[in-house]
Image 1 (cartoon, rainbow, N blue to C red):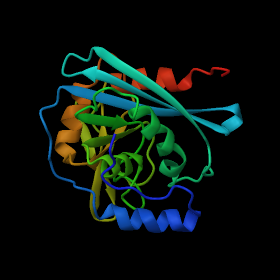
Image 2: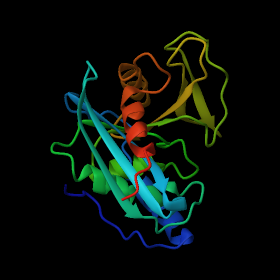
Image 3: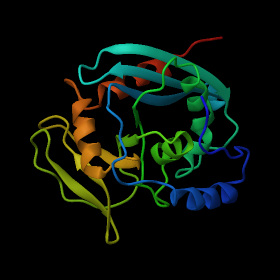
Image 4: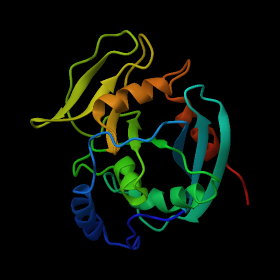
Length: 223
């Protein structure tokens, strides 16, 4: 796997913030999508009381969402837990897991934020810029922004707003169930991010990509 952009990972928090500001200018908020045949979910868990980062990738066919391939990688956790800087803690293991996948997916859905982030550079944007691949952030919780509750039926959404800027969509993926927070990662417009997220949802609140990756990332193994 060849990275489009490379940078050091052993940074101070101040250096990491500065790098987020620098790289956020490379995020493409419009559609530059290939034909979507393979979608992937990435998720991260921790072992050994947080000392080891465990990242999982699950690749599914699209649009029928059949599991095709999975990969797991573990790396020492070298960056502290700091809200807003989680990609520096998690992405080294995510990249190691993606390096084990035989064929890179056409689209990656991340369990986290894209541009719905204080510096418009959450983990989905960070990963997308590094790989120059389309990515979407699908967060279970809101990091920043305000919104009006969308109607309760599946498929409805309302804009997530920070200041005067729309930074994401608060999306109902199931009727009567609390929404998820969708945002552009890289090379995907917000409208397409919403449509593709819905296309990856099965019977549950979270996309199937996320559900498969979460199961793999959450299993504790003593190795």
